[in-house]
Image: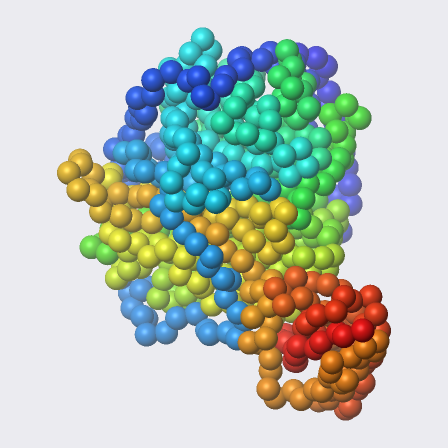
Length: 628
């Protein structure tokens, strides 16, 4: 452990002078071990699950949330009477479901804590609360290897037989390697954050393992709730420090940020260079549940953005944006700004299942996001203000450095409860602001399943796509309240623009086991509707007439079209598979007739699609042929 530095910064934000403070410590973490998965010991897949339901008036965090939700939503039966209407239909195309298959089997534990990563070559790692499954994209639904977190841990390490939980996995698109993080132990006497780096792009080979101290201050706290994000050269891990055996009020100590050098981990260096950020305050309070933001199309850096909110509020419009300015070796600083959203978010009610069972929605913390084209997109749980169902929010910070205004939208439905979203970027070029948001759903007459919506800057949100229907209720814990979260896995396939993989939670009945109504993981691949040629053809708006001529063309083509009003338009060329070839024009066109022309000599002989769209819809698309 090296220097301990305290920074106090005063800055002007939204006409208010607010103090922020933080501390940093440098650590040199010794390597635990290097393990080869093909040489691992016999695996018993052990797992311990607490079946204790939260009790009203109890000291636990879950008991506090139960009491708070009972106070905010006292009449759950009357709040759910309107079942005849659902989310307003839109004309925005849904994401395209490519394939899906069952992921990690039920391990007698709830929640599943789904997370997933896929490499450019199609190697997939899927994790839930105690198991790791490996797949090959070409083989699809058959795991190539399975291992428990217990067996993945080196037998000589201090974490060998501590309880393992909350695994998170991440793929590095520039180094073509994987990172896996999990927690070991849940008391101050035994708590570590185990960080594992694959030596090569083969996840079934050697992994180098390091253990960050879960109780770095040697007091009565332990580490919980990890989230990962990468820059070009570093890994960021955020956690919450929690006190032993405390009530919820005293239980949360603070959130930490670990900043780790990836190069050390990939080569299995003797020590892993790292920096820990602690005592992160804004005004008079701690900032909790920090969510780091990885790049949308690839990693960025050296800076890292993180976000937080007022997750226990019944209604709030404030979000926090944090920025770590540089790598740990280049005197990084932390700045914190806060912004006001154009809509409020709030503590979500518990979600409904069949047979009067409920699913825990926890709080309104930020659950995922990305940074792309100078903007942050983020998602989390919230409440539907119209009928007090659980819903999800999607926010956009257009200027993360100042973050004074934030666009916030709710994805909600009068017939269903939505929860635990995550988001992946599906754009194809700079300025192509689109994404797929995956999430879980349930209702009092519908088993828990998985949905996804497509978002595009100008068009808005699609209707939810049903990715996987539930096959039964989930009933593992005694009582009416079951675990639903706490994570939803999603990742862009970095070398295939528009394609994502996800892993969510669905209910499934088992035969011959102690908990027949269980929760399973479902893995699926989806594609942006703006990345497929046939969908470009099908979205032609017949109310807008246009003509492309000559067709076929040798060297120049022209489009004659008419606009009812002056408006911004985008004119682009695609191949027949939907791959963007060239953006030709993005600006304002006048009302009335317009003629646009372009040279086709840069194009090879063949067929292409020319598309004209405004900020809300595709006005015209047609195939044209180039024949030089």
